[in-house]
Length: 309
Image 1 (tube, rainbow, N blue to C red):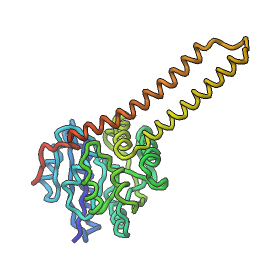
Image 2 (image 1 turned 60 degrees about the horizontal axis):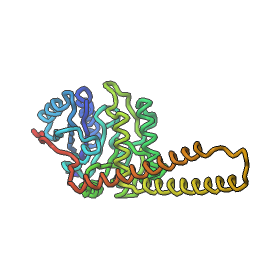
Image 3 (image 1 turned 120 degrees about the vertical axis):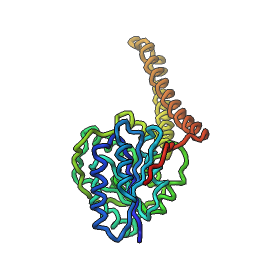
């Protein structure tokens, strides 16, 4: 009998987690040909989430809890869950009840058709305006930086096969970005349409700062395009500066008495070129800093304890 592993990063979900588990059980009643397990990762949630996880573990033989020592982020929590998953298929979903476990069969059916990874695509998203904006930016950046196909929608509700999980686990460096790891592992990826539920409790755990950090993780870990963009921008700035210098020389030689003093234009060019230099140096520094942290073997995550029945 094939097995499905459900991986759920948990943060501020003490009021929603039991409902998600109930939905998973209902979904698996319709897929009785599969056994299943659930892995709940408490990402150092400040509320009573870990207590709910302990209660669910006591009540169920097939639930494992992982308690992180600090907040490492959703993607690090997913990596921890991957290490504990034993299923032939792995399905990742959110803890807020918005991603529908009852439609998990759609992901499994597509995986059985020969795809390696399947992402849920929502017919009508029920996220906040801010979260929708963040998702759109993430889609654009993933397409430009990571080579994501234009017609592929990526979401936090997705399923992958065992060999993709094994390939993802080969990545041992800090700053994991699961979307990038999936995209570099296979091109056999598709979407399935599912319903998106309204959030009934709480708000999204992603702040603007966390979204920026997530994007930086993905693009500096899996793409050198930011460096290439910086190089192109530097070349363009140099060309503009050279053309401006020719313009100044021509005006000077022509002896035009109405030629304005050059201080303002000079300062503008200095600010533009200085700003470009700082931007490029900052980008290079970001890459070098992450290389340094990786060389120091900084952990993706640290597990305080594993909660089992």
